[in-house]
Length: 291
View (cartoon, rainbow, N blue to C red):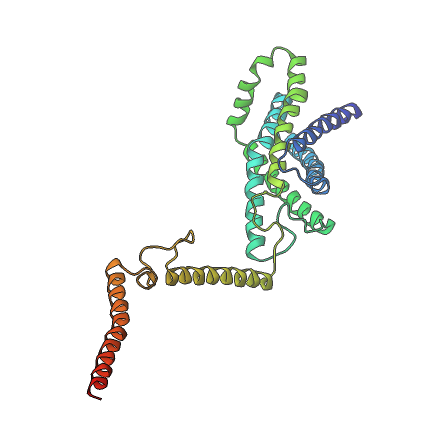
């Protein structure tokens, strides 16, 4: 590979990666700069890994190819197209399966995007190794798919409009297609690598802290149940007003019939002393007359 070809590829990679800066400016919520650098640096390392794997795959295909007159632009197109579409799907499934395995085994620091608080470089390089392993698996699957015979026919059909113009074909396959497809690939992988904001606990907690959260939740529930029981006993509804079916309504609010009976009793009690006084006055006056 000539120095000019290497310069062109580095230029394309720089342009593609620079779009991630624009993507970060549109994020809501925006990742901290250190977290974002950790996520992006994974793709930089991954780009070196993919480039090395592409060189190995090109060498193997060149040694085993029986089609001496095959168009190298078609193979390059198929390689880029499968890496940025089918390959991204394979990488996504690999990382998701790895995250589930790490969660099940309670292995700390290897789940994608979880760098700790504060972020730790040790977790970054461990996750980068897992990510690079995923790229190797992805590339193996893509190389196997490339051996399917009908793909070369598909590539000829897609590039058919450029076959009559070699310069246009090279411009499209070496510049326009890789730039556009790699930008899409970087954006999708960046979404896969970053930690999702809807996760309840961004940092894993140990078993003691899980028991503590369970205890606090149980105390909150029991406190709410006690408040509901007190409201029922006092005849209060959820808004704090007295309901018409409380057990104390009959004592606090007597009926009109009960009020009238109580007034009659009070009047009889007031009249009783007056009646006794009149009898005592009659008795004393009679005794005086006899004397």
